[in-house]
Image 1 (cartoon, rainbow, N blue to C red):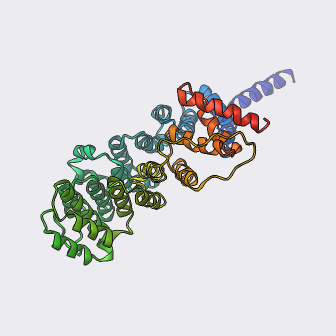
Image 2 (image 1 turned 45 degrees about the vertical axis):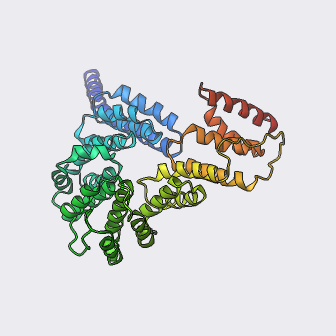
Image 3 (image 1 turned 60 degrees about the vertical axis):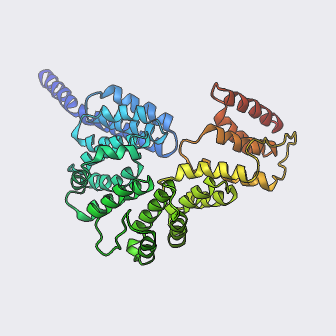
Length: 408
């Protein structure tokens, strides 16, 4: 019996050893699931601690790569793209590689490197993960729109890039071609824009518009454009009007008037009208146009328009170099209409721009503080008072006073 018992103990011990990886895997799965739940619950710090523990225990396997991806997503969500890129670059397993590469492209794009993002999106679009490949092809359209005008030169072989990214889908290639052409026109690259429309996104049913076409024919072409051709006709006419203006041609005003008359409802035209009014010093006309553009679904110039709306509104209300009046009230006071307009413009800017200029946030907070909207002012000032520059020091002083008057 003694031998039998020993044998059973040995066998039991071996069985327990064989079952241990399964138990460990369940524990690791629970760690991952807990980190995901904490992230969803708005507790990224707690989630990060679990993920770092998982990574320390699994530096070189799928669990470690899952932790790298999740840590990268946490960094990405709070706008820390450099550490996010480091986490995604550390992924080595095929299971997570496509997703890490896809999020790498978005880090590059958000960090302002659209050229690198386009190249990374193309790699994902050619990959064998269908959902990510489709997403990458779609995101290429947006990425080309974010490309700086001088960066377009690095994509001379755009047709090859498009065909590779579209996997032979002509509709997808045409959509990306439309995005490139729209961006080229907005950047004033008229000939390149028209060539891209003609070569990469041809539409035989659209009226021909060429930079050498006389002004009268341009206006006629715009008037006869079908609904399907309106966007490209608007792009071309607006860009050509801009060129005529820069060249000092007398017909520039005719082209501007035609552009705004026929395409004034297009987001690009709304933004263009704001720019035109601002350049002429008509700030009270520019501000509502910028605001209307910001509230549209177009993103190409959204951040610039939101900032221009703030400047135009302050100029319109004659408050550009004026500080709001001081007050020692503890209860909210009525905000005069001119300051209400500026507060609305700065509020729209802060709600729109992902990485807002601290000076705009300070202006917003300063107005709230001046008219004793102290709880709202404190919330804004608290985000500014953590730095070491002069603006942060000023914010800290106002924050301390606001908190004192609130009795905190």
